[in-house]
Length: 154
Image (cartoon, rainbow, N blue to C red; front, top):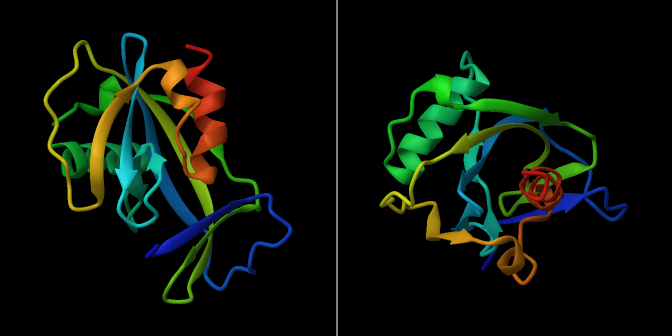
């Protein structure tokens, strides 16, 4: 059963009940492939990342999330900020009734090789995808436009 349902510019999305939530996610590439995680909370594919904690900078959150979710220790200077996605229609509705507007800071990280990665408790699977393979998978709706904007431009 899904823990969360995501919406993007959907007129049927529920109204938010919580303040805006700041997140940091990464377009992680190795050559012509993109790393995605199969999320446990929604059983869909998404970018690696998560919430920015109080008093934490987005770049620090990104480095922490990479460490927690992949087991990689990456220096902050290896990340390149790409964009901020903050339109009001980016919504996450959780099973507990909390509904958040999501603001996502997106970073790029290029890895020199397909490094062995550790799967965290938040993920079912980690996988490298080619551009063609991505067209055939279910990506979290709040990440799909970001993947399209950045992975296909690289």
